Length: 432
Image (tube, rainbow, N blue to C red; front, side, top):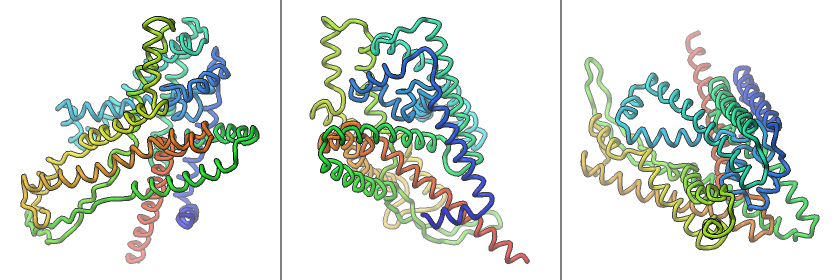
């Protein structure tokens, strides 16, 4: 990896691209510390600590790199775009017009991207205004209507700027810009976690807990890399075809099926679904009677609060993994395409037998990926209790999974750029 980075830095164009990425991430880090007027960050920080993460607000804080805790311009982070992308993926399956638009090629994808951006702005407005209501009723910060409008505009503008920033990184840098912004946001939050760990050690937390934490961190990182890179290669046989004056030769290749096709999305789905009801009810001003009882019961559904809630969270991660994999992988279309282009799986007849075989293989692989995601998600609540470092949430959950996944994706993008330039040099050398 270090050798690849050194070679990339020695190529002027790649050096310019990497420098552009670093500059944009520096701008993101600076913007994450520009506060929104009218809200005390100390009150919000105390609230998140008191709530053991703060529910949905804590999830937003994690993706924004602690910007919500500081109530900065980037407090919402890129989360509205993540939500709008998930919604668009599901709508593409449900609405035939969007499905047809997606199949139109580059022009169709641009139209879907435009709709996604517009939906991101709408969600940012809704979430920003919802946060001001939550600050009024839950956190105890009094915000006037004018301040609510100001905060809503500022947070929406911050999210829109981050979306533009991510697109610029994708076009002019290396890797996926949105993923890199999320990656940078999580890394920014590590500073606060490291400070809290240092304070705990000074307060008398045993050092053995730190050793166990490091061991879990290394083992979890290794497991994530192993599963993220893991694929099942299904052999594909290509038949000889004649198209016009061209004849394609028979051959063999592989159909790669990733073990973790769904990525981190099922964890976000499950966590949001379990935390959203409690977050909404917590906005109600009353804490007595039926409302108080409802708040108590919903708070017990928070992952990590008790073994039943944590087990339910793990089961939801497994269920959402199957659900999301079914959305992004159309097995029937895969089988039809193999038959359409004259390809087949050795020993399996084209058509329905191919569909049933692929369905069976993908179902088994998805089970392995779902169990892996459930383990990673639950570790976020188990490891802090074992080690005594409650504030360090990087082991397990979405954080480490995103960091490792984005790091692998970015390094593969850099290696692809290097490979392309090596081929270019070889071709130019032959032409001289």
